[in-house]
Length: 335
Ligand code: NAD
Ligand code: TYD
Image 1 (cartoon, helix red, strand yellow):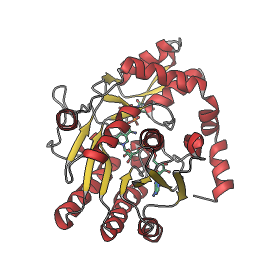
Image 2: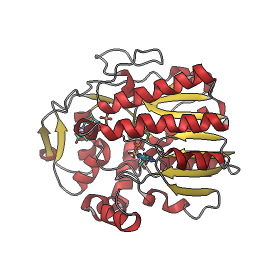
Image 3: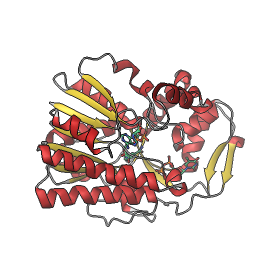
Image 4: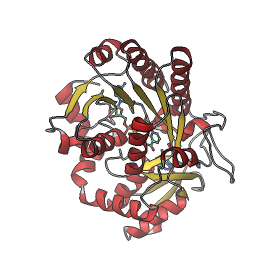
């Protein structure tokens, strides 16, 4: 099977490529990535020499580039490529629409014309909006996105649905909760707080710190996507969640405790506008229909993740110091 992975130089995409190469010896993978600030070929250093892995620097919104790759023969597409950070979407939503919505449409159209067999849209629980203290999102929950990021992901999901309904296009949508693990860009809560704590720098907690997220270790997410790619039903939506709800404050305290750092490092800062209060995923459908369940407990996942950032300062110190950005500008020209 020849699989086009988009955004494979990012956090989840790179973990997914590694997972596929390790678990499917007959698969070939093409990774198309624009290498934005969040795309990092260091994430794939250990697989770059693999003869079943190919990298193309390209934009999913560039129809010519995408069509050329797909016309060369691709069986399936797994679409991770996206602008993925809520705070950035609040500052400037334009690029979120271009990549997340138009980019997805370009992939759908090129895939449809060529008759690809499967298309996995890697979406998010944020399309459902925010929950009160009780209940969890099912695949039938109403779509009520609250940030420009979430709105752009929702629009992309609706395009996948429309291509399925209109053309019988073989699209499947996955909606996962918050991921954590190795190679996550240190602007997201967990890697930001671990690396700040390691460097004895303050941890900026938004609002009252009582917003709740439902955490999943990235490999559990990758295993779910792999299962859905091979066995999921066309036209379906699958929620994926780790079942580990924590307030941001609880999580911050866990990180500080495990790193033996004082709680005086916590800084309460101005809240994020439109900040969703709680996410919680009901992954029952994926469990029932495809037999998936998370293998990581939160305790084990967070411990291994903290250890990984402690042992891989080479990876994040250059990102945080800006050396990394200069490196890519030198290597690949301006973004
Ligand atoms: P990330 O920001 O770490 O990686 C995104 C990757 O996409 C980067 O490598 C970037 O260079 C690439 N990219 C961006 N624009 C592109 C374009 N126009 N063309 C080609 N490549 C482009 O994001 P992530 O956390 O790995 O998330 C991956 C996907 O999973 C996203 O679609 C996101 O919405 C979804 N998701 C993420 C989470 C999470 O907790 N991180 C949870 C659920 C769903
Ligand atoms: P984030 O990692 O940005 O993921 P998302 O917004 O997609 O859920 O944020 C996770 C939670 O942590 C969210 O409630 C916002 C909060 N947060 C902070 O309190 N401080 C921070 O510096 C960041 C980045 C996030």
